[in-house]
Amino acid sequence: MNAAFRADRRDVTGAAGDGPAAPPLWRSLRAATVSERNQLALRAVLVVALIALAYQYSLVTLLRGMALESPLAYLGLIPLISLALVVVRALSATAQPDVHDRYLDYLIGLPPLLTAVAIVELTPARLSSFFWLWRLDLLSLPFFVAGAVTLVFGTRALWRMRFPIALLFLAWPLPYSVLLVQHLQTLTALTARTVGAALRFFPVATPYPSDDGSLFMVTHQQSSFVISVASPCSGANSMIGFLLVGAAVLGQIRGSRWRKLGWLATGIALMWVADVVRVLLIFGAGARFGERVALDTLHPVVGLIFVCAVALLMVRLIPVFGLRLVAPQLRRRWRAWREGRGPRRPAVHRARTALVIVTAAAGLTMATNLGLQRYQLLAEDLGPPRLALADVARASVSGWTISWKDHYPWATQYFGSEATWDRYLYAPKPVLAQAPAGAQPVFLDLISTSDLLTFSTYGLDDCYRFHNYDVVASDTVDLGGGLTGHQVTYHIRSDDTAWTAVYWEWPVRTVGGDRYERIILSATTAYRDSGAASATRQQMRVFAENVVTASAQLTRAAPGAGNA
Image (cartoon, rainbow, N blue to C red; front, side):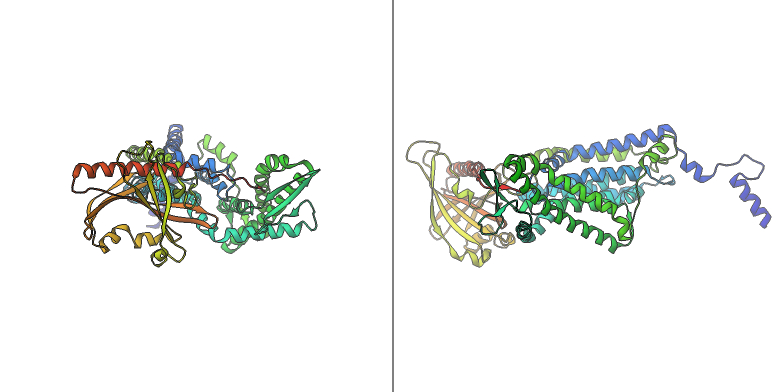
């Protein structure tokens, strides 16, 4: 029996037997024709192109953000780093058996793809301007990529690419914004104090009187100018930049988890030290060559140079931490790919149906993604609001005058200890202008709070019910800039009057972080006369659009010291 078993085994492997030798299993899996390799490459290029088209505006805003003086400037590197890691891992693919049962791929790939489409299609209308504040379009990106890779290339491809895809979550600005609000001022003060202490040994500038100690005077020949060590230049930019680059490098490092975290933390601390040196270098350039050289020539490039220098230094120090860098041998892998020795034939041979699904999802997402440009009226590229606190109360609407009317201190009971509630009055000008004929005065209620959840807890509808108001009509209105408002007509039984109100909520920027405002515009209406009521609702909708546009057009640029 043992002899027969050995004979059968020799027949299978081709070492013995009467019939023709069968090729080894690993060789059949490893072999790939030129057409199969080209098909795989074409499929990969097509998927990358569909993802780029679907999220083209989101990716453009990330790339534009790299030119800003913001702690989030380096987020635009994440998609590029992720794509590079995908190429490296694709060129090092291992042999895989063919996949004929695709149920698992669709079971795993469809949910994240549908989740991504649902986020970009359904949430903008419900969240209004907060969709862009939280940049949920970038949150949906890794879900879309995971679903597309699984459907087109299979579940095993998703597992191989799990790290580059997960890295895309680092391009989501919201977590950084939440954390930086709590610690950015502390980091700025620490950097300013450290720079002030270093000036005792390198007297290239002198402290300038200020509340937070962030101003320094630089003297060049007979002239002097003030440079501010502002929050974007406190080291947060460079530290986040190294965090992103270091996170990508960790994917190619082998060693214990704690050693990796130690390496990353050391790099972040060293990056902060380098940023202090950068500020001193800018001061020295200003003292030696003048303000233009320091702020216009050196300042825009020296930060990126320091980030690259520290990153290269930390790569050289990887063995010091007991870690090992697995360097991608791209040239050898590319030559092997061209010679048919890798990557192997794709496990998923037929992906037409999957490509149709991904293309349809990309088309829907692209149409919505291009429409996100409307948010530019009220928000910056990476999500921060353009409007300042109470800008709406300074908005000048043609044909109307605005004046302060009253203040309600009991707003703190409902919207937090720092909440405010002020009422203003828009009155039509007596001289004929753009105010509609017979226009009624419009009241503007401005509620401001730092706790957004209180707006959900104490909604306007709940207020109407509490006072036993009868809601006659209610609908949503588009106010421009991606802002969705609510319009309601209600009847007050006690005095038999009716009002039409248009209200919305939006974020505004302050020195201490974002705050949130609820704006309510209301005017009396004749609700029993359907024609007059409809005309009033239309006039209020147009008036609200004018208020939003006027608020966005306010000049918010203020002169100040140059930033280091």
